[in-house]
Amino acid sequence: MADIVTALKKSDVMQGYVDIANGRVVLFGEDFSEDMADRDESEEERLEHVFSIEDQWQQYVALPNVYDEEKEIMRRFASDLEDADQRSVLLQVVQGSGAVARFERQLKKMLLTENWQLYMLEYLRNVARDWCEENAIEYEE
Image (cartoon, rainbow, N blue to C red; front, top):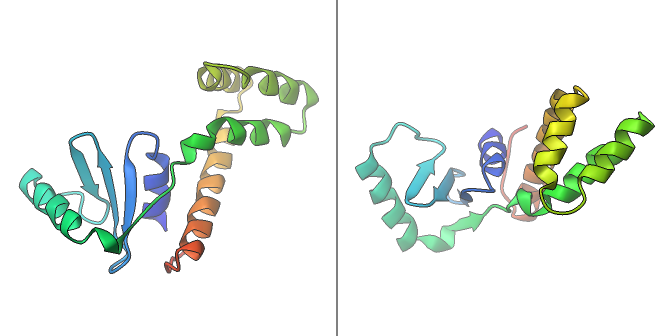
C-alpha cells in the first residue's frame, strides 16, 4: 500500500495505475513512466514496459487524482483545528484562486506544516485503503 500512497502523492502531475495481475504500481507523466517496484530500470526498459502496458491495458486500474479535491481536504483540515482563530484564518485562505499557495504560507506562519503533512498522509492512506477495497485489490498496511 505504500507504493499506492506514494503514487497518490504524485497524482497531480502523474497518472497512477495498479497492475491487478501482480499488484505493481506504475506512474505515467509527460514522456515519463515509473514502475514503483523497479525504479532502477533503464530508459529502454521503461519504454518497453510502456508498450507492454498498452498491449495489456485491461489488467491496469487507474488510481484517482486526489488533488481534484485538494481545497475540500484543506477545508476539512482547517475545520478540525481546535484553535478557533487558526480555524477561521485557514478557512478564509482556502477561498478562491491561489488558495493552495495561501494555505501553505499560512500553515508555515502558524507552525502547522507538520500537522498538515501528517493529516494529508493519513488522508492518502485512507484513500488508498478504500480504493483497494473498491477494486478488490489486496493491500498491506
